[in-house]
Length: 440
Ligand code: GLC
Image (cartoon, rainbow, N blue to C red):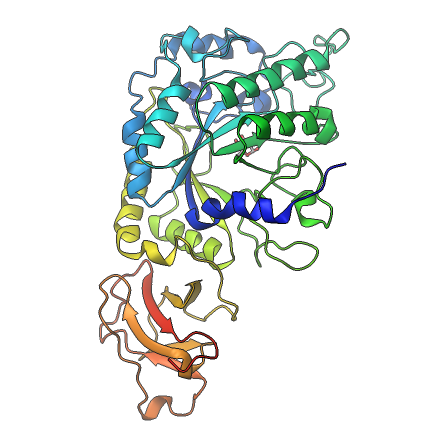
């Protein structure tokens, strides 16, 4: 009988809750067609000519050290790389299949190089592995909900041995947990319909993973997809409960809490444009300003954000993605302390921005210039020791002139006379607070 150990869980999650910000990387054969990683399923494409693209998979511009440097400078503390996506193509040298990068012109174990590069850059290392596999002959085809050959009578499921597929899937995850040193995160993806829980032999799988990688953080998708949360929110989590919840392309309006109203670890996974895998035609890039503010929003609600890059066919980050990561680097370089190690401040969302907090350091993220001094509500005036611009450390006056006297419960901070804030993306005001109940 499995007993959820809250203390053990909290200990395992400490680095994740401190990190707050990670890099997701979706790279594979789908990066060649440039139509996203669901191309086969969306188009109900047979295996060929799609899988024939392995002949064009060169990884000729794959520079994992450059990826790692960009991520670290952007303030990311961990990364997750797709080792096998739904199409079944493996970026790692699995002994269980030839449908892998080491059998392509790339001729390299791309996961091994990723792990080494990111670990050397000081980031935590995560691996994504798809529970679905549209290449494997024993995975359901015509009767499955998502397979490219779903509903196709030419692909009957008689004779397919799903247990044989599970042996393959568990075997590959064992390879990933054994052959690449310490792995900090496992992003499994994903459960749907009756394909969930023990259908994947989840208890046995999680037991194997935690035995091989005792401190590893596992997501919640042995139970669910991105749309629901799983048993972590209940008083009796299942043996294969996720360590964190994975809202997809959404930030939960109020964060995510369990049945007792306590915040649980969660991470919004977000694309920079509209696709996970490289998509030539998708020019719908979110602005850096929007993405920085979404990171702040996640942290203000007690969560993380993992931001995705889809490298192109050669393994190069798109220039737009590089530009966004470099914008993050500039902002995080000055303001990262208002993200890393921070969480929510239990007060209503301010009108002109958001709060994050770390101990006695309260960060007011100003997204909009106020008319006059910046009003900050929900902070008792007698607890505020000082106000500073986080980026420069420069003190900011707390003003009490005649305009503000009618609002004794609001603090007004002078942010300067210019019409715009000094940082139009997010101008961070740091308030140092007296500890609750202390005189100074
Ligand atoms: C969904 C998509 C998958 C993507 C994942 C990222 O599960 O199916 O393509 O890798 O979200 O969270």
